[in-house]
Amino acid sequence: MITAAIRNSVRQLQSVHRWQRCYPAYSQRMFSSHVDVIENAKQRLDQLTEDPGNEAKLKLYGLYKQAMIGPCNTKKPSAFNFVGQAKWNAWNQLGDISHADAAQQYSQYVNDLVKEATPADTISDTSDGYQDLLVTNSNGVRIITLNRPAKYNAITLQMYKDLMHVLNTAGSDKSVTAVVLTGAGMFYSSGNDLSNFAISSETTPQEVAASSRVLLREFVDSFIEFPKPLIAAVNGPALGIMVTTLTLCDLVYCCESATFHTPFMQLGQSPEGCSSFMFPKVMGYSKANEILLLGHKMSAAEAYSNNLVTRVFPDDQYESKIKEIIDKIASLPPKSLSKTKQLIRGLETSFLKDVNDKECALLEERWTSDECIAAVMKFLERKRSQQK
Image 1 (cartoon, helix red, strand yellow):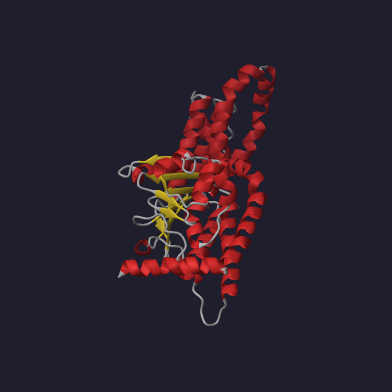
Image 2 (image 1 turned 90 degrees about the vertical axis):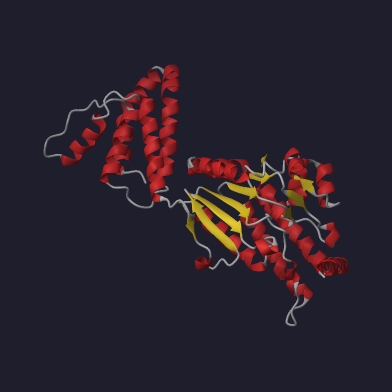
């Protein structure tokens, strides 16, 4: 939210630009760094949803002029030009502060304004209808916590829908810089809740499979299409869909005790989450096949060495390290982050959606196959016998 006065001051930079054209090499070194600082700070100003007040706007105006032009070099306006005098005083009082120092002060003041306007921890869970998700904000970073610790954060049909809603809302919310996805308790997620495949007397297996295909495709598409940095903070074991979607995240951090398991073949199913393409891409075919075909469970160290995770933290340092990462990304200019992500990911978006569609089509066929039904029944029977 840049004021008209700040925008209009750009016109007064013409003499500076002429100087730059005369001395381009020296000019580039002198001006590029603090101009970048100013431009990044102006992007962060867009996070403000309310007017910061005249005092703040005058301070921003003075620091902007000092950073871009230097010490005040204009005549003081007449006594009856109250607005002009206020702006002149805001600039003139900065004296001989250098371009770079003024730019740094401008950037820091913007950070302070944004921080003041953004609640440090605003919780919105059941009030927004999210029964098994905890959604919080930390200085512009939206944190989504899978909140079924007693069920190891297994994903229900409603959680699929709620996760999509939170991602779609965060993607269009100008106050959100990035999203962090994590789990409550000891698990990141145990993957699909198998009750998702329960068949009532009013539905057929084919109808359940068809509706599940649509839901899964839309869920994975919400990861593929998310326009801002998406960060996975894997706090423990991860299975199935919450492993495969990790390669659709931009940064993945985990604790030492985390494990990564995709037991698709044991359940007579097939890969999802674009893992049939992304796993070979990031790990190579041999390792991807071991994980997707043989169901090999990776340790955190193995996941790191095979490029599935960005960094592994000791269990006793994990929470503090994740907090540092959240604070770091919250301090960065949001438009630069989203535009750079689009540059990195954009070329693959339509291709990944096609991969997702093909994976979901195969899964629909698998879910109704005798092989899959027998494998799932065997798994459930083994689980029941272990609970006795």
